[in-house]
Amino acid sequence: MPRLLGDCSAQNPSRLIEHLIEKEQKLDHQRCNNDPGYSIAHHINVLIALMGEAHLTPHAPHLQMTQQKVAATVAGRRHETSQIVA
Image (cartoon, rainbow, N blue to C red; front, side, top):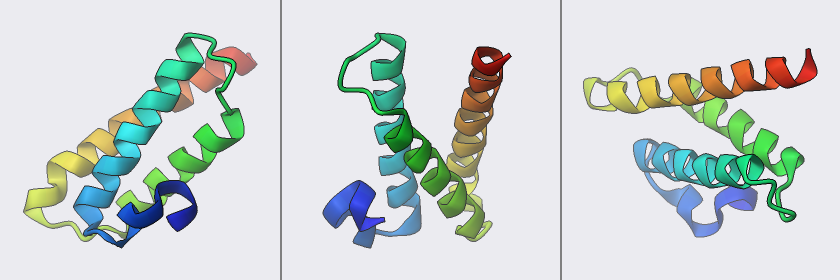
């Protein structure tokens, strides 16, 4: 996680997930705008970290909304990727 988020990786799980979501949204914006600095490998690593953190996060009521956001984000990217490959 420090490789992806630096010092942010020491934060609590819900804040960590929020940082990953923000990072993923920026990467997706780069992807959609054909930004020359966009890295699909980095984007995939962020999505993998996002899925892993969401899976490891306890199912506490105050984190439910965050987990739903993660699921929606990952599901949306999975759908977009399958259309590109097809």
